[in-house]
Image 1 (cartoon, rainbow, N blue to C red):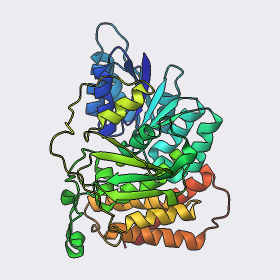
Image 2 (cartoon, rainbow, N blue to C red; image 1 turned 135 degrees about the horizontal axis):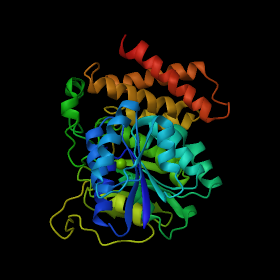
Image 3 (cartoon, rainbow, N blue to C red; image 1 turned 60 degrees about the vertical axis):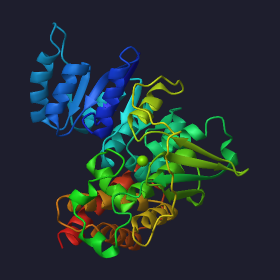
Image 4 (cartoon, protein in one colour; image 1 turned 90 degrees about the vertical axis):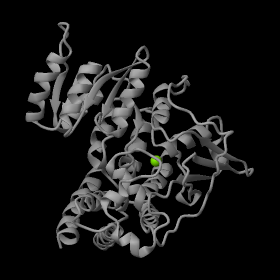
Length: 394
Ligand code: MG
């Protein structure tokens, strides 16, 4: 039995992880669940999955969860222990009984708990890309030091992971990440400026959380994935390319030095990569819907329009500059997307705000200083204040 801790159990990846756990009750159990605001859903999850621990944001949520989750298990069984704040998240993932941690908190909130889980020697199934964008060097160094495996849940990286099975990493020519292109890939520049969060949340192929859906519409999601692939697979970004593939059937490709292109394909269903990381290195017969590739599918691949979608170029620039610049990229994006969702800024303001934050940070910082968790957290705080005061409210 693999006992699983889910950081962010009420989010899109969290709920789909619980579906996978429910499909294989003899193999997996939910040891720890964590939620920030959707306490009702967390209570339902406690009743159904009977976790040993839960972590919530604050004392009020904890009180509610204690009351309902304790009764919910019934049959004289004790309810889960309830913890709060960042310390609570850390307790939920580092408990000695936990075998694998699904790291699926959006934004930078998952960084510290995930680092602590790595230090505790837990296998990490990584669904949160901001962690590697902000602190890839620190996270990967800690994983190596602690002999911890980081398995990518992100469908593109999960695809690359599968393509690389049995391959010599030195023989990789390049990795090609596919992008759906989001809902605006055929829009005019004028139309793009008028797009609302409702338009952007209407993703054509994948069913995901709000933040990642907006990031898909700006292509920042793909920019983050370039940085994520750089750290996960130890490749320079010059060997990581992006193509627009609206059907989302090819989840990504690896070109080897002999010219062979290896691709991983499948339905756009996150339960498949989640199941892959839970069962890795085994493969289990899955109950999810399939598609039949022998039917009349057409696959199109086009280069991205970097002038229309400047976020992709900003991500390449950030990782080339290195140091704390990718952290500024990530946090400025988090702030800008949040402001866009609240209709405080327009769609094309998102890359403008990120670019201004990066420029100002570059002018004020020493990029040759060694990167530490402290310097990343300081860049995080600086970016939040700068974006809110100078760019969003102003
Ligand atoms: Mg992805």
